[in-house]
Amino acid sequence: MISKDDYKEAYVWIWLPGETKPVVAGVLERVGNQLLFNYGRSYLARENAISIYEPELPLQAGDIPLADGLSMPGCIRDASPRCLGETCSDQPRAQRQGEGSRQPRSW
Image (cartoon, rainbow, N blue to C red; front, side, top):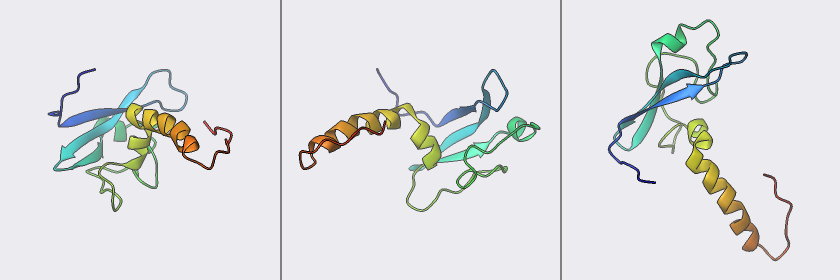
């Protein structure tokens, strides 16, 4: 898979409760070394709009500041395909580096 490094933004989609199709919730925009999230106006205008993760991305207009030490919202990073792959591939490696006892996998 070839990846371009020059993208400046990415749309974030969400499945709302009771809906059969996802909708665009907002956009991640590259600002320096950070990816900032901004809910879309049309999403905020929806009666059934919900926050992606209230403690980190409250339902509000404008760029949402990042928590200290993050380069992008953690809830979006956690949901990204790459993060899932890292979590799954790191779990067995971490088990092999343990003291020889195999723990049940939690995933």
